[in-house]
Length: 254
Image (cartoon, rainbow, N blue to C red; front, side, top):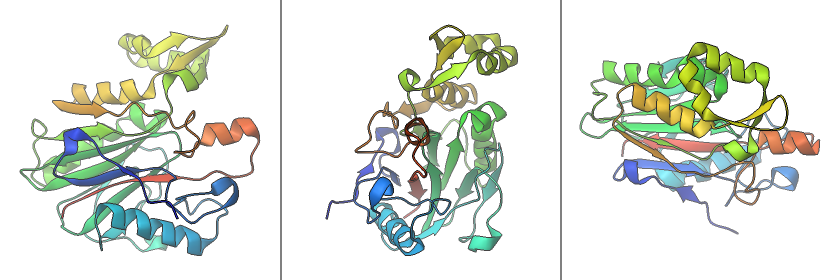
């Protein structure tokens, strides 16, 4: 049995956190590994065991809280884990309660973990392109401030996500970002005719810095190209596979 791999960020040193991939889980087949996605066709018992392992790798005995992710800019404050059927539709969570493990699921989108150590406030955001351009990280920071955080003290890390070399988009996608802010063109490289390569990680890091976050770390890990380590929606789609796994990023207060 392989050990659960929890990838840490130097920017969040001293904070209970981890970016989990697919290593160390009990799922099999095309979902082999630490699949935590209830939206997959995986056995619910295996998903539950994977979630337990992932949580214990970051906050032993912690209580995992997740939301129903919808690629929105919305963030919610968490006091205790939500019942499965009552999970709010949102894409970020924040808390100041010890023992909670805030979890964000991804399969190419960017997981963002944030912490104000002094205030004892943490946050986790799911930043796909829709959420990123919509301001999900801005919403997370603002909600952390309502719990006593100060953005000049917040440190953030952008975890494993699809890299620019793997993320081909069309001209309509490019125009959407360029029309929002012409400076966004710098996050695109020329691809084949009529297409571009989008740097989601760099764009998310830019949004964090623009919001006043002084410490931002990017891990530079590509979910698409590293099959042994990460799940990838786009890779599964390109292969015509019927399902795909999801990995989780977790942060909490010990």
